[in-house]
Length: 276
Ligand code: DO4
Ligand code: MG
Image 1 (cartoon, rainbow, N blue to C red):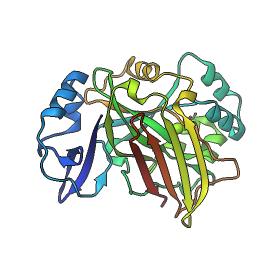
Image 2: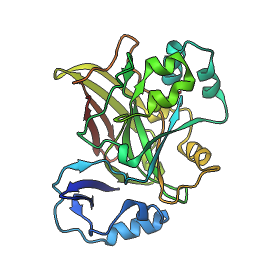
Image 3: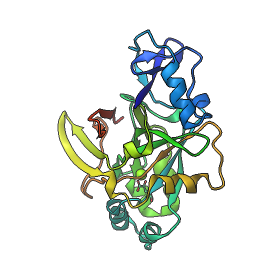
Image 4: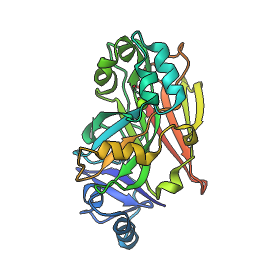
């Protein structure tokens, strides 16, 4: 596994591998035009001598896209059935062959580690959604992962599923980070996903699931996404949430959302964002 991070250096952003800056010309969009073997070969040969100590930013470039999948866990189906004021579209999509996939964010709008995520001013019921997020190259190969937060308005989606883009796409609705773990898909199956929400420094919610509980395979989601849509510079694919806080819970400004996974080699990755 190789850990790629993006940092804010004065005036620009710069990528690092394993904590050391890559040459200034390196960019992710170009990397994701390459096939898996080439990506590994390139990252192993690129020199890195200067320690990357500047603040992290989201591990995505401005023009890259984030797409998201929905209702891929029973927990998500049940929570949405409960909040919905209209028929059983969630049951249907959970069982259907075609998954739910929606556009989530353009790269420039994504928050990185430590940057604020937001609650819509016109939404009364809000939750973060902690999601394994696949990093896919232009050749439809899963070349690694990052952690994602698919911030969602339950009141707006609950009123009518056709409001989904408004419930899901707004400033501060998507966070990715802390970096990209370059890994084979088999190394990133069955990992735990944990979420903790802190209020005034104390846990207000804690939940955990396993990617084992996901109904669909990563490859299935990615292949549907690529069916009629090209991603010449790669794409980020959020794979759905398996953790939904109880109905009594709504996120508040000042909360902190902490999402974590631990790999099979015992490396822990955390995405943490304050709620504005
Ligand atoms: O159906 C609406 C969105 C579902 C979603 O975002 C999820 O299950 O994670
Ligand atoms: Mg989601």
